[in-house]
Image 1 (cartoon, one colour):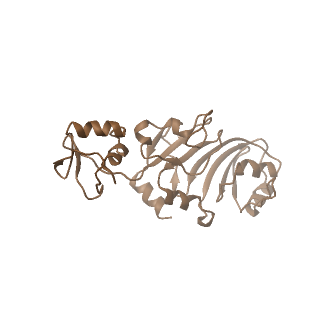
Image 2 (image 1 turned 90 degrees about the horizontal axis):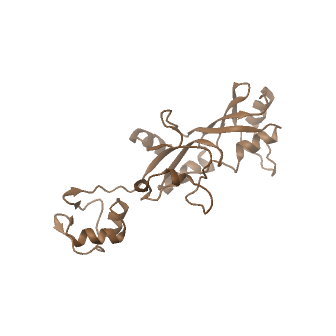
Image 3 (image 1 turned 135 degrees about the vertical axis):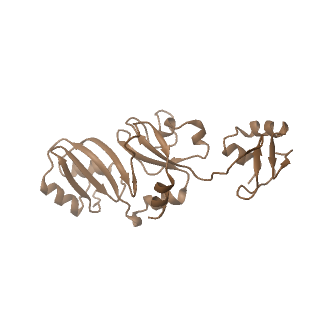
Length: 233
């Protein structure tokens, strides 16, 4: 990896900023002052310092976001706010992206990472990763509705969903567990049985559960324990 790319990724500014640091003799590799920004380094083996401060390489970032309503699950949009607008500049250096999508008006757990393999594993239909939601609906849910969800329902485009687990919490509040992530899936599933989702929140994805202490719009990096469990699935 080029030294200037490494330093930029680790939060030491743009390529131009990095060149300025090197020109001022503030960067050393393996205890040698570096004069060129484009030298190749091994971020895992070489000892890289700025002003005698060791710079530890971080390849991946894993962020748990409590997504609020009103934000797109996207990295950028010309007209609307995205979930990346909620992330501080220094936490966007490694280019995290949302794993899957929550609708603009849907709240709850959203994982952002730059680990493409983990994202693929969590989203792959073959992995059958559970996604748990809490929903408020327009009409009371019946035992017949629970049975229909358990068999999968036919959406308005003719797609027959995989079986889903529907549980009644209160008259108009339910818990839903699905293993797919079709466009507006839960809303469309309820539409197919003559009901309407008024509020939707994702509370878990696989082993990862939304931190109850995380306010809407706030985020934190995953703990080692959370990441290990997520990667082991």
